[in-house]
Length: 275
Image 1 (cartoon, rainbow, N blue to C red):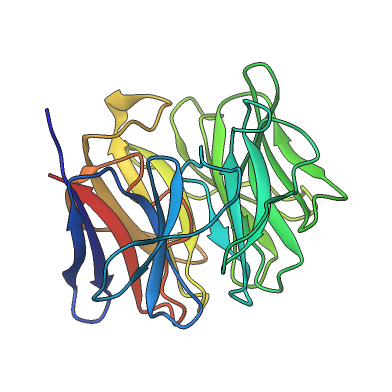
Image 2: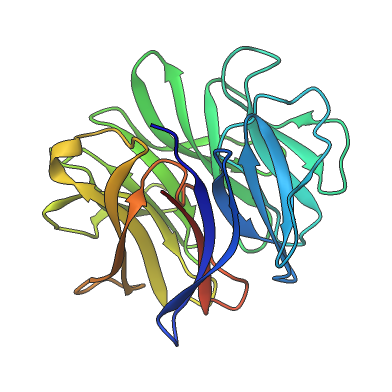
């Protein structure tokens, strides 16, 4: 089946989406530039900048041309953090100027998949599979030093992202038997389950204004994976937890919103649907 990608922005106030680009290629994981005027996203191993109202423009990432959908910008908007497999044939996190250039290795250990950066730009959080089939949630300083394991083993853990104040790392985990949302303090203390839903919950993204958490939910039958081409729902709840609401359903999944996808002001978010 041949599918197309539709890159869209949802406005929380109007409760409406608008299409900003559609293409026959597989596009994934849109996130905003600092000024909110463009999106960064990936397709076929490359990273692109998409001006709102324009067309995608490839970003020079040097040798890193097997990039996946785990990428993001530092808070100053100048540095792109990417996950690529060219150099080691395993996932490695690199830093490269948004304007393009030579990737600089960040990962202390492989495999590591970038997922988020703290608002002060000092720390990154990522999924690590540093031993075969052993998933962990890690943080390190933005240069890769001082790596700290927050959660390791006892399930599949993925999709970590910082709260707006940097105090918490949110993530999804199967540690309860079903994929649900959790959060833990940055020092590994005070692990809390944050969703108790009939779905398989993935990729929690706290909003930059500290008000909300957005995530993607699969049908429970999908299990502990996050495939593409599924009927999923995007859901929202207050940042401190409580009853969630479903904003809308779509055909998507992997690539829809793997990384932080909020607009800088927290009033809208970007995502990809497939059709």
